[in-house]
Image 1: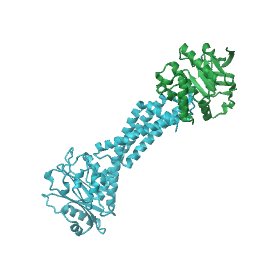
Image 2: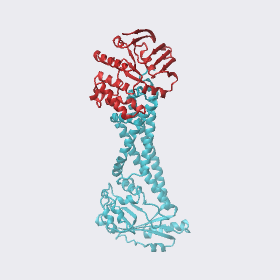
Image 3: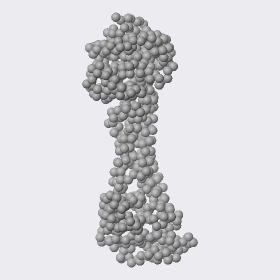
Image 4: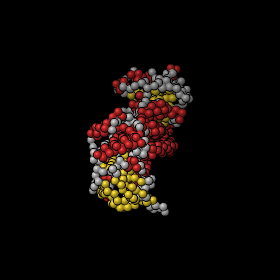
Length: 387
Length: 227
C-alpha cells in the first residue's frame, strides 16, 4: 500500500506526458465500443427475429390511407381466415401521433420499421423487436435507435408529453418512414403507464409528423399459421394476405437476411476493431515505455533508498494502473456523449460496453506493465552501479 | 568491526577479450564510528568498491561482512533492506528527484519499509530543520542551490539512522566553501556515531577523515592516518 505514494507522486509529476496515452485509450475505447454496440444491437435483433421465425409467425402489416381503400381487419376477422391459428394485434392509431416531434432526414425515407413488444403473449414474445424490410444504411440513425434499444429506451426517445396524454401500458411501437419522408410513431396497449413516463426526461426532438398526413392509420398484426399447413398452402395464404389485406413479412426470410447481414457486419467490423485495439495498445505501450525509460534514474534512486527491483516494477505498474483507471473514468462519459450524438440515443451504456471497455483497459494494462518490467529488470541494476 | 572485506575481486567484461579488472584482492576493515576516505584516480575502482560496500553490486569473489552479516549470501530482498535501514548514500549528483519537494525526497526511504509514516515525517522535519532547510519543506529541489541539495541528500540518507553513510564524491559538484561545509557536516554526523566512508579524489576532502585508503588499478596501494 505504501508504494502507492511514490506511484501517485510520479504519476502526477508525469501527467503531461501521459496525455497522449489518455487520449489514445479514450478514443480507442469509444470507437471500439461504438462499432461493437452496433454489432451487438444487430445480433440481439437477429435473435429476436429468430424467436418468431422458429414459431412460424408472420407479420401482417396493413398500412392504410384514405386513398388506398384496403379494408382493415379485426383480430377476429383475421382469425377466421382459414390457415391462421392465432393473431397478435399491434394496432396503431393516428390519435397517438399527436405531439410527435421533428427530425431532419438526410433523404426521403421509403421503408417502414416496426418495433414492438407485448405482454399479452408472454410465451411467444420476449423483448422489443424491430421488423424492417431492407433497412438502408442512410437511415442508420433511425434503424439503430430501434434495434439497439429496449422498450424503455425507445420510450425515452420521445417527448414525454406524447405519452402523458395517453393512458395505457404500451407494448407495441411502430415507426413508419414513408415515401415522402414523413414519419410516424405509434403505440398501443392497455394498462397504466403514466407513472413510468413521468420519469422519462425529454429527448431532443427527432420525428416529424406533418398534419397533412394525419390520416395515416396502421394495423400491424403478427399471425401464426396453422401447423397443419403444408408449404404450398402457406405460400398461397401469404399471397392472399398480401393481395387482400396488406403486406406479409415472413420472419424466417427476415431472419435469414439479417443473419447474412450480421455475418457481413462481423466480418467488416471485427478486423477494424482488432486493428484499432492493436494500434492503441502499441501506442500506449510505447508511451508507457518511454515514460519508464524517462524515469529510470528515479527508479535507481528508489533502489538506492532500499527498493527491491520488484518494488520498482510495482511502482511502475501502479503508475500504469493510475493511467488506465483515470482514462477509464473519462471514457465512460465521453462514450455517453458520443453515443448520444452519433446514435441519437440518450446516454446509455450497456454491460457489454463496460465489459468491452474493461477488456481493452485490462489488455492495455497487461501489455504496458510487461514492458516496463522488462526494461526495469534489464537496466535498473546498472543505475548507480557499473555492472 | 562494521566492515570486514577480504580478497574482494571484481571484473567487468570478464567474458570478453578485454576484461576490466576493477578490484583486485581488496582487504578493507572499518570500525564502527570511523570516518574514512577512499581516494584514487579516476578508474582506480573507488566507486566499484563503494557499490559493493553499499550492497548495490556483488563482488566476483572474496568475503564481505557488514556488521557480522555475510553479504555474499544475502538475498536481494535483504540487501535492499540493508540499503534502506543500515546504509545511507550521498551521491555526487545528489540523486534527488527534481520535481519532488524537499520533504518528498527525504521521505523516499520510508516508502520502502513499514516504519510509522507520521514519525518519519516528524523526523524528516527535524533533520531538515537541523540542516537549516526548515523553510524549504515544500519547495521543489530543483529550486535549491547545490549545497542545499546535498544537505537534502544527506538528510534523506540519515532518515532511518543508518550505521554506515557512504558518500561518492559528495563535494564534486559543489564550490570549495560549500564543499567544506558539507564535509564538516559529515564530521558532525560521524561524531554522533555514524560510520562514514567518503570516496574522493580530492586530498582536501580526504583530510577531513581519520584515515585515507588509496586505490590504484583496483588495489589498495596505501593507507594514511590523518590528523
